[in-house]
Image 1 (tube, rainbow over the protein chains, first blue to last red):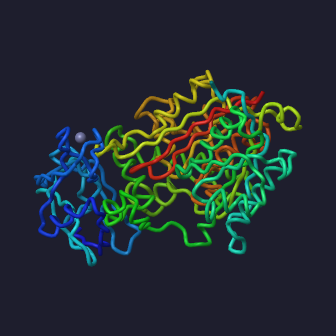
Image 2 (image 1 turned 180 degrees about the vertical axis):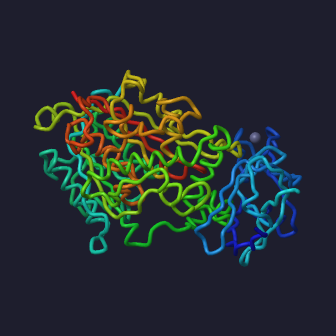
Image 3 (image 1 turned 90 degrees about the horizontal axis):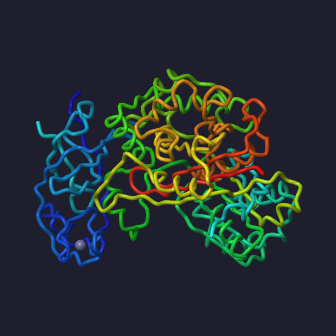
Length: 132
Length: 386
Ligand SMILES: [Zn+2]
């Protein structure tokens, strides 16, 4: 099977605490929140650290590499798509889509790298594609 | 302080409809309430506590006590998704034990079949997770599929093993005249049904039905004054589980936490249970919950459910003898209340004779609401006939 076209992705609705993330996304810069109190990162991004309740007011650029923790190809959609959890090299596991690949060749544990995908009228969202 | 033997389920009613385009949601709630109160031998004027969850229309308990014209002194509308009603039985027992009410009514109803089934839900933009998940097309089915895929990877669970859950449910549903799907199916039927979202096939998924249900929970004094069999709330546990700040672990559900709490309070262990209602939103849900609440070891759920082990009269753990959500009914996309209702039928000896468990005096009802693969609420009840 060949590569699947990417389905139309609805725009995320930024909140006050996520503005910086989506602003960076517009420049295709993938950032993670970092807590100024405990130094840890987390996902999804919050202004109040979910580890220690400190302030997460710093953003650090992520490597954009990770591995597939789990995935599922939605076959009953007009345009099939692959939802996935990807564990980032920095630690957190995030919900995302796998794109630009043969869905039937996907497997858990595969290495992936970041690929921004445009949305309908909003900032691009961080998706991932398998590394050959 | 414990709720053990401090409250009894005396009324249980499952609305017979599976498609109700001509009824309102509030009406289905009230018709279910009427059925459960009649079952108990009580009237609406006896109710002094009302319990509902996210399916209740309008302002939940306010809209519904107004619609039903109830005069109550205690309300609770805690929502943890489709398992809420298992938890609300425990909350009702707690309120009764504390003297806050003595006749608690719990209702559920909804019309997802008439209103268009399950969609990708945009949710409320103020819901903090929505912007991080909705763009990626998370649905109910693929959020459970993510767990199934990981379970297969970690433990070697197979589609054929998952299929056995549906096969067992179908064996039970054939005896339920109200069940949506009454045909007995085979493992081959399940694995050959169309793939919805890998690795879940159409027959791994529960039905979409309109309907409702209600329960009446009362104090020991009132229970003994009625003519219904005594079904005691012996133990309960509840536990939310979520994405753990990015430390996602799809290999277990909140049942790992809610189950031991319920068993400890009840003073029994899984091997004492004679019948189990297990929330079957999808086949994988049953497999993971059985592991988590201790009916088998982690990773052994696929083997445990195989070869008819969940079929009444055949296997070691008869489950969902009404046909469950997979075959019978999943009103409002919330299967919690029907889990309690069938457990009550079993404990009373009122299940269909073809599926009634002999001498069923100890039963478990357990559920997982919300999305197993993102955030969900688990609730466990241990019920006893006395
Ligand atoms: Zn911190």
